[in-house]
Length: 568
Image (cartoon, rainbow, N blue to C red; front, side, top):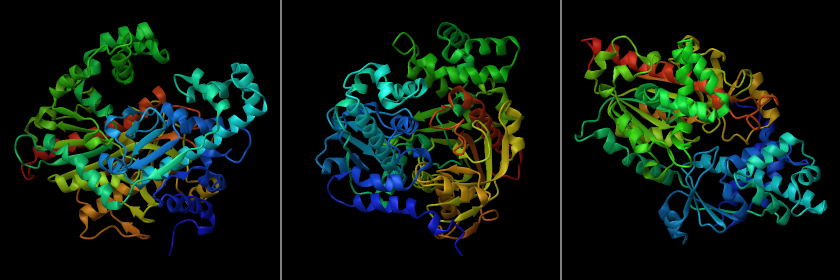
């Protein structure tokens, strides 16, 4: 019996998905205008004003943040899985300019004229990108028509705001969405309509697996070291900064220099809170601010880096920390932490567990990857599981939307419904509220929650979410389902099932832990991802979750090393 919302409640979403996949089967370019009707009909919660003639600046800003700043010059997007695929299509992307986005990690190359090459690692990239591009085009063209009707081609900001019917806040948001060169881009909206064309090169499951294999092949030499022994692994999917800060200690070691930077620049008015925390002896509060300021300290020094990345990595390497950026030309970075080389004196006091000196005897490695998008999590974790020795634990920390909490709260699920496999996964989460709450001062930690893994942030509407909410689902995210499908295949002799209730509590011989922090509240227009960046606001929940994961790993390894009955 199907446990998922009745099909009548998701017909418009399904129609949208079928529309773009059927059209993208074409071997030529497809105009994005072909997706617009289905996009509007889906009534996406992230694009509530899609069918309104007035601009939905919040939705445009959300889309623009997940596209490169060169989008105003782009007319064609080509999606492919490898350089070879692009070259087979006569696109010499090796020499194209690398571009990036503020809100989405994705490998992009631009020919500096009209074509943007987008490297995709799973079907989730298609589900994510097509609605984003369609939203961008719809909103651009609304603004174009309003400016043309008002006779404005190169007007003042006040004239533009009046023609578009924007308040000051929305005007500021529009300028920010257009990027650092907004003054030159804004007139382009009045000059031309947006008419994107898109083409998908291949897109097969086998090619996604091949990409994951290429990705792991560049990480594996660091994992193996000089010998071929496949060491025990604690797998983590999180980010590329929190673990390094907590275990490497660079920010705390260079506290005075970062404090001086904060006093000079005062980013987000954090200089005074940092000084107050230090004066009060508040080690935890000061460390969180230092960690947040570290990126600015490294990259905002009079137009040039204050400290070379190599210097930071050399410092981390002394603690057995290795970072691999974009392995296999896939924008999912990886880090390896050799537990035997950690320096106890450099550890954040919050992760300095009893018996940490025993870690010098450990053969285990933490493999941390910069959490992939959607189904890419399945491909990457599956490949890692094939290439390592004993898997001692898998832990996932990531952003989520919440239907019952606030931005910045931490959410711990006990079950996951996966829209990809249509499975309901029931599992024993090794984390509970008491593991995270001691490291939270403002946010709340909610455990025993139910999560749903959605295909895309855009592919859901209010009625659809209401059905989930009424059935007790409170977390909307994109990776837990694919990860659990991969875990099932690690411990089972067959592939993961479909449309089943999958009881995994007794079948998994290693730790499994999921922690999400809320970055979006879709039912609340007061706190919405479209209009609010987590910024420093998200530091507490990020580090609270990271500390809980690291303490779990280090305490487990110390207990293993201290027990003569357990192999090391």
